[in-house]
Image (cartoon, rainbow, N blue to C red; front, side, top):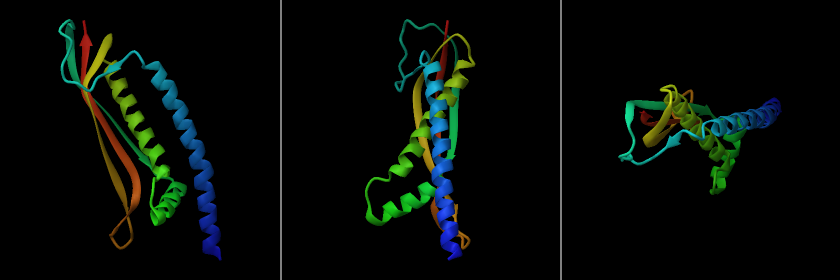
Length: 153
């Protein structure tokens, strides 16, 4: 009986606290995205011949976001029946957007008008390990954004 109560308390805490932290993180992301709209990100490698490049630098943004207990339970239940695991979709979306924002912040530090070209994203999952050494469920997701920042003259 005590195990069930602990399980219910953990799920409730994960749902309410995790939901609050996720909404708070999204508010922060929206505000920072609005503040960095003028910094252009391009996936292409070619640059405009009219650009006068004063400086070029590799810029990166890395973000690792952990899964809360409620999302782990919800994803585990979804795995039983199959289908879309929406509990993880917001996790990946937040990590991707946060990594891009961190890369933009590094590029903006070059000063002046900056364009980031050849933007790429890499993702990986970091699995939790069980006591017996076997891999468990996804514990967190890592997203790395990188590109070449061009400070224009």
